[in-house]
Length: 271
Ligand code: ARG
Image (cartoon, rainbow, N blue to C red; front, side):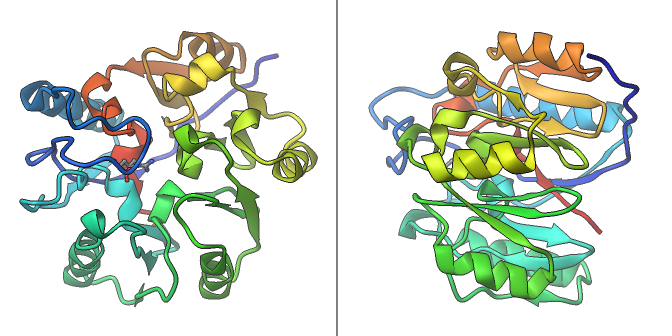
């Protein structure tokens, strides 16, 4: 099956991995006893940023703060739809100070509506935007209560999805929006009921193998045509091509050691 695909212009927010390290463990990928190469992490991050720019997209930069080694995962700092900002509230104290840093960025940039949330939510880590719905993960980080808060703020229907495998602790490690209402996901990361919901809403979705999911293949970013995918997800590269997408493999091995990859480093500014 193949279809004519078109890219649409995107604006992204990224935060350089200046202070990136693995100094604590809040997901199964993080092992503080294993070395990370900060210089290589920076090169990989710059490569991702440059690829977005060479595809014609805009990348805005958030200043990193010392003492916040996970701040490179900018997707967790907020959810932006129609220029309205739903702020984050982190589950773990290690990352709590990232939320006000993001809020300040949006306020300084003149975003009028920046919501300070009541309930724990980790931004686009757990919230995905399709044409018709907001998909919202729960189970590890974002509170189920954040789902109704999100729906009330944006006035869009929220579909709650239960994550059950700690390796896929954020929705964006298990599901990706490719374009419109087209998604791909890893079924085994979800509860049986949530799998049934996904099958019902997205009967034609591309589903990933565990191997591709473990290579963070779902943690990718699509502009409707080009899909920036962690290079280890070789099965997905082929299957995306069959569907008319242009997969762009990127190596994010150092960031992977903190449980993140392409999408985690990229917040979409839907202004
Ligand atoms: N070490 C970070 C954490 O556990 C990784 C965050 C990855 N971000 C994401 N959007 N999945 O919070």
